[in-house]
Image 1 (cartoon, helix red, strand yellow):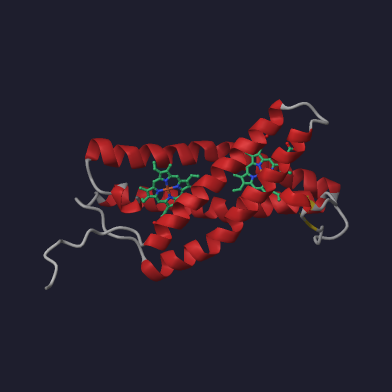
Image 2 (image 1 turned 45 degrees about the vertical axis):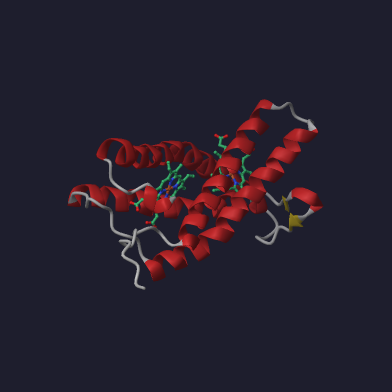
Length: 181
Ligand code: HEM
Ligand code: HEM
């Protein structure tokens, strides 16, 4: 017998899974680098926090490929009730910036470490060897500064994104958030 249930438009399972997995990885990357900043030099936990930051950041880089592929192939479900055109454009711009950040930020981090001539340490004694040449400290420093500034700026963009999701859900009463759950 055919179902009489209306089809509830949501992002696909894969898209939802990847959204929340990447969210967790970004949260971990931010948490680890902040905790590292509170610990004294030479503290073993400080080193673990740096390793966790690198690992979480690289996980984002790994997951963003499949996520973008799914987005291109499966699209985004419509919002009910539909949003005004101007709001739709603001959403697109914010999402575009978030995608760009999720690709560029880990690459900048990776380049900063490697150009400083270091291997990227990972948990469990693993590491990614320095493949980006034999070090260019000035360039490494410049890239690290951009990475840090971008990291600070995106607290605001991510905050805006979360506030928008909650606004859609609680004040506008549409299904924007439910589509991602
Ligand atoms: C989405 C992924 C990432 C985010 C959101 C992120 C964010 C940040 C933030 C917020 C800071 C500190 C900024 C400050 O102190 O003002 C930072 C520092 C840093 N990040 Fe990342 N990062 C990411 C990925 C990576 C990756 C993949 C690497 C390297 C493999 C990396 C290497 C570094 C380094 C070396 C620092 C400077 C640490 C220090 O000297 O204090 N990051 N990152
Ligand atoms: C690190 C934090 C986050 C990042 C980087 C992030 C990134 C993104 C990106 C890139 C999209 C665009 C999806 C697409 O259409 O292709 C998206 C959609 C969405 N995100 Fe997040 N997100 C984060 C956290 C959150 C949180 C905490 C919430 C909930 C409170 C949330 C709720 C949503 C919702 C509801 C959508 C669908 C928006 C729409 O289709 O108009 N996100 N997110």
